Length: 287
Length: 319
Figure 1 (cartoon, rainbow over the protein chains, first blue to last red):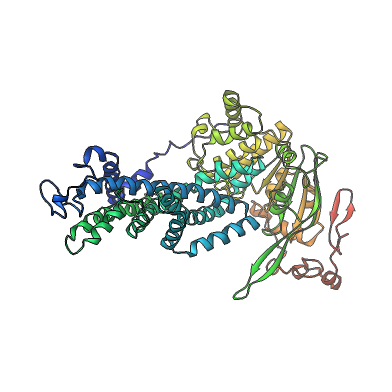
Figure 2 (tube, one colour):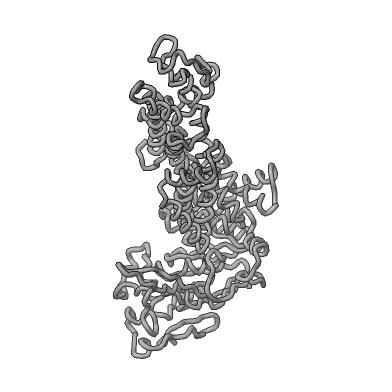
């Protein structure tokens, strides 16, 4: 039998061309990239030690020495925001990553096996999802005590149900495809099928969800810090800085505004990345 | 016998109705028995929904049947332990109808074909690569296919990949579940020719599931005809086509187009839709559409009985 000819290899840039068609993804990446760079290079970027107190400059307004002014202890607000990015982004990334890994693992197993395994997991998951995220975070941190590790743990736990749900749903859809039966008839183990063949095919959706959840995780961290359940002071975190500014809102309103702006920019950036990725990975979208 | 399937039954339970859903049973398989010899091709024909694909999947244990026995080369498939089942599956493979959904879209062809070799400890690395390239060549694909993704191929080529994957472990038996139904007629012929070559060269046995009688006639030595989860006629393919005994088989044969205008002739009219497998009619399942139906057909299900050596039919009126 003569070898059938193949079409030329398709250019594998359809994802790229879709991703760059709308500027949203690019803007989002730039915004988030700037914040990450700020966090990474904090020791070199920040003009002052974020915890250094200078009582003579208490609540000083913006000046050439202190671009964004100083707080009630006379600490430089710009430096605190730059250093605060480290904690806030770190907590966000680590807790989201933990939530993704655990949630996807559970979700794929639940969707693949079905039956009573699925019923138990889905039921437990629905219970967890019925708690508002912030309440869940408050309860966990209140029980475990405020520390950086407990904060990450609490946020990760609130993230798990969302990823269980999305991974389970995508796995259910994948399982209907013949290739899963083909794998079984070739004698592959369940582990190999779940994590070698189903998982790579549902990662699109998981990644989109993760970028949106990163924003939620960072917001949860700032909210918990704002109500005093974040990393203990004097550690600079964005939520903590907002809180300190809030206490002096009448004397120096800009103290709370600057860190809020930083939070806002990261939120916008991450949501733009999420939306952009969703559009770029949607095969139904025109190339 | 290489494969011996006895009294296979499978009932699916569906939730139906609104606002108060009720559970309904769909009898996809209702006591199906058939057997396949070494290097023999068995055709399984019938309308869509008659359970022919379910029969193939249950025999492979891709779905667990409720009842019945499947013996492959003297070993019981349905009670096999996982390790034993894995060994058995090495010798029974399946080719699917829809070549688009039968491939992992993120796995290159070469790696998809090398994986089973590694899983079963047959070959790794360069040895596996050589073997895969040989199989690609055998199914008529160029070596360059090795590094391509499934979506880069046409339907016919994808089906060749599916056949290559089924061959990778050098099985004795291949279940072909409507392997050419999703393809253009010209491509169908090529794939059938390929399957025929493989059957001769590798002395493969086939269970060939199809709704297309022309395809089965071309390919299979023996044929079973299914209707609503039951086998209603079986025998050598030539006899089934030339002298069908069951009225349903006659109708089925008339419905198969003959590509010759001179053959145009009066058709046996078939009345009505196939009845729902949820609520099959009592007695003979075919009686509401049968021109020969009498009272006994409405009350008693006919048993599959021998009417000639190697020929069985389930009809009260067949002789």
